[in-house]
Length: 279
Image 1: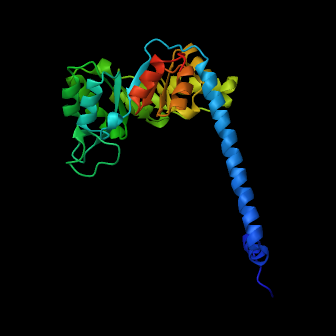
Image 2 (image 1 turned 45 degrees about the horizontal axis):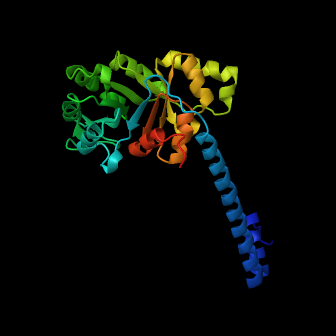
Image 3 (image 1 turned 180 degrees about the vertical axis):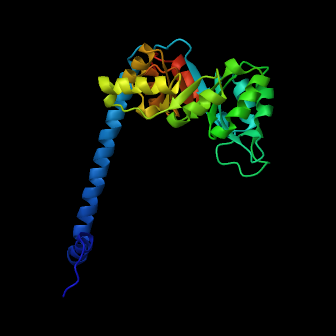
């Protein structure tokens, strides 16, 4: 009984038997042409969208802020150099990641902390920040650190200069209990299509009411003007990350968020400064 071949095996056998050098060249040419054509279509579409943003009037919600993503200005992420550079560059907010060492010490760190020597201690960060006007976006990577983090926030009297991100819906109870009075955004992936429906909007409101978050923190690709307007109309905020390319910045700005997190702070500042000016 002949061996049963899969479709892929039959296709490879067909190519082996029939693909002459000339046929292969023509096939490769057609594939490359198809890819180039689609790249041109996408490029033209991106250019058109970007130009359409340029023609819009730029408006900001009250209290709009720019957050310097950890590692901005060419510094090492979650380093004291980053904090000092953020202060020197007079940014509104600096984002740092929060974790705990095995011994319970709260430190800056994105990845899991495995030793009692890893990460810069938050006490050093708070000591550096307290004499400046810099606010901190504390991106919580480990909710077990929240009780000790809260004690340090109180000790350094930074309650009104910090807020939490990285809080998932199932972690909101931890944030509310362990950091009372500290604002926190809810990490969420909103639908760019369902946001137009009443049922989905009611779902978002119910989620925010239940979690106690001040708003939604999401990747910029999921944000829209409809989402932004809806949140603002209901007393909530929108924060978007990580917005580094110019076309991303333009799209984010016309959506009128409350906060934009970026590694390219100066690029965003210059874009805002020169918005609408002829080049």
